[in-house]
Length: 249
Image 1 (tube, helix red, strand yellow):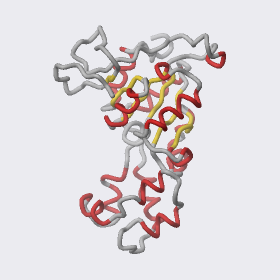
Image 2 (cartoon, one colour; image 1 turned 120 degrees about the vertical axis):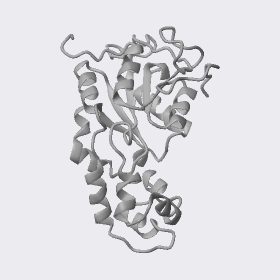
Image 3 (cartoon, one colour; image 1 turned 180 degrees about the horizontal axis):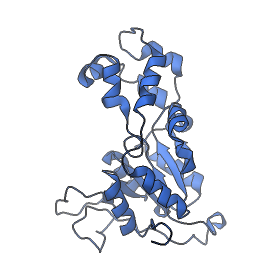
């Protein structure tokens, strides 16, 4: 787990490292993992590979999550009512690839009531939009040749997101819970990511809006950034030495 600076952080704090605060900004809440900027000589597959590798959560980090507003409205409920009557584990099972769409439809509600599954999918598709400023940041990172991957808890409906927003022009949908059968913050999921990438954990930066997922990344040696908005993320990446200038500006 992260070792936190004793002084309380300002509201904009987003960077998490392992052992000490970043020297350039002592007010930032951190638990330090220094970023490797050169490939490890012990792993030939990292030769000529630009580091750090950037790992992005998707929902409420890159893409607006329609669950909290659009989906309750679709069912004619408040969010509280929806949470109370939906099956407590069905969506997580769907995210893990344990159940398919038909099984989700059968057990989405605890009482087994029927609903319009295609209508729900259409509702969510309408709600998927880029979070303000994030696509421009991804464009800048792509132009600077950073390797980027999705690292997300989501079912195979991520394909709906891709079909609408074409996120793969910026990053690869490499690490989805539905294909790995693991969910953040399970440490094994993070370890599977770095094993797949064949890099040291400290060669990666992980960005997620949920602090428990960021803490889990820090726990395995990955530098974590808690997403709050695109401007703060841009500032944090620059602090970590990530080049996001466009055309040399």
